[in-house]
Length: 234
Ligand SMILES: [Zn+2]
Image (tube, rainbow, N blue to C red; front, side, top):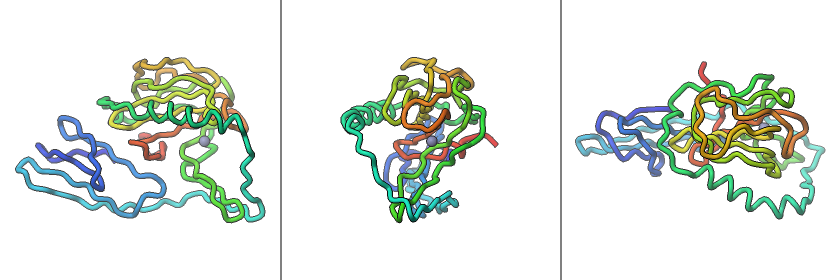
């Protein structure tokens, strides 16, 4: 949700946590797949009075696939176990860079052509044990097809291959909103580079843990996983 505080209002919080606002009161908040059903926005008006608003959060129908006869058996992978903590620390630090960019307020465009082959929120349940839900949108396209910035931002990470993500680019759109582009065959940007909407990021590939070439586009807001599809312009 994008919003704006009344003129002169300050100290915006969501469920008690501070939310960044621009000089003219613009702000961004987001909810993930398994959010609680109610949230409270609170702020202080220009006259010093406290104000708040309750938000009802409704779940959407997620694509859940139950595989009762197929137990989830993680394959032991010593190299993954060895490398993963440092990878997660690197990705987490790149996502957490504070940013005053306002690109999040612009309309988003799809970063790749191709059929949507995976929806945000979908999940498989193996013999009663749910796996992690799919936290992005997948676009199936041939390896080498272009990946373009859905909106402007600053590149915070451009490297790989990571064990799961393969070659990965993180693009900061400001106010805690960060796009992730996974499994790239080629990266065309470098850390610190400023991109406009439509600039080349790299090429679709099959690096990391995948079964075929596709782009996985993920979005986080202050660490909360959002559905990128909800940000696309109608
Ligand atoms: Zn995916």
